[in-house]
Every structure is written in C-alpha cells, then in structure tokens.
Amino acid sequence: MELVLDFSCELDNEKYNEFIDKLYEDSYLENYIKKVLEIEEVEAERPLYLSVLLTDNKNIQVINREYRDKDAPTDVISFCIS
Image 1 (cartoon, rainbow, N blue to C red):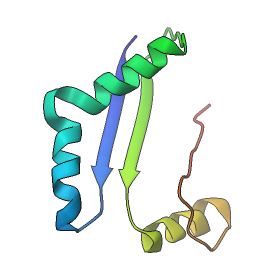
Image 2 (image 1 turned 90 degrees about the horizontal axis):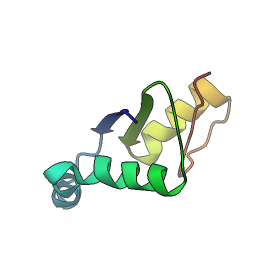
Image 3 (image 1 turned 30 degrees about the vertical axis):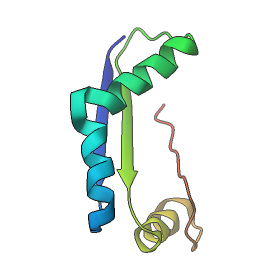
Image 4 (image 1 turned 180 degrees about the horizontal axis):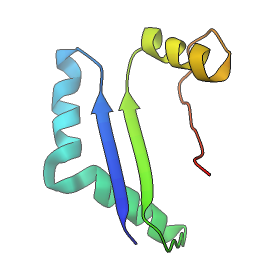
C-alpha cells in the first residue's frame, strides 16, 4: 500500500523543534502510520493520502470557522475526501 504523507507545522516555538525533528528521522512518522494501517488491516488499491498540520488554537479556530462554521478552536479536525 502506498502512503502519501503531507506533514507541516505552523508552530513557531523552539520547544517543539526537537519533537518535530524526531518525526522526520528515519521516516518515523510515516513508518508508524503504515504500521497502524497494517494492524488495522486497511487495504487500498489507490494511494492513501494523509495530511497532518500542527498549529495553534488561533489558526485552528480560523480553519473551523471557514470549513465547519464553528467559531472556536478544537484539538483535532478531520476531513474525508470522497
């Protein structure tokens, strides 16, 4: 199964840099996600696309307002592409 991973970070905070660097090391995040998909027995004929954005409450509130008509921050937002 092919996994296309788009990982981005809008946090401008030094304390997260080490954590984010570790996610990139040896494709740690991508390998972890692939293992979860394998355990869950997810099968797909087409590539799976996963986009992960680390951001702050201010920016997530903007996304919620624009796409979900909810003017408040949340911990997680997910969108299904059909």
